[in-house]
Amino acid sequence: MDGGGAMHRTGGCRCGAIRYTLSAAPVATRLCWCRDCQYWATGNAAVNIIVPRAAVAVEGTPRAWESLADSGHHMRRAFCGDCGTQLFSEALENTESMVIRVGTLDDASAVVPDVVIWTDSAPAWAHIDPAMTAWPRQPA
Ligand SMILES: [Zn+2]
Ligand SMILES: [Zn+2]
View (spheres, rainbow, N blue to C red):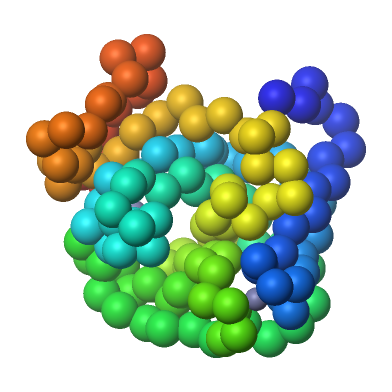
């Protein structure tokens, strides 16, 4: 992880139609086993960073889909209409922060999750790292 100071990360979808720049450190880095993430992470947990919305600059126009999540939040999930990569999600109830799907970062391996959430929805075969802080559902 970066030791602080100016943070500047870039990322985008697989085909390159959507690009973004992140200019703040993540507020949290989580592995998420919610049922929704299993759809978009093709059966596995998703790795997500929570970031200030104001720190994300997007080039290109993602498509979006809105649904009611298990957390009770109305989520708007943005993806590339060309290649289908899931990029961002935002709770309409939270105007301060948003989620970036870590696999879309140019340097995805630089982000290490330390919290795992929605372990109640994980399949029986899932390995939950005992070193991580775990939440059975949405963190308080
Ligand atoms: Zn794309
Ligand atoms: Zn999730």
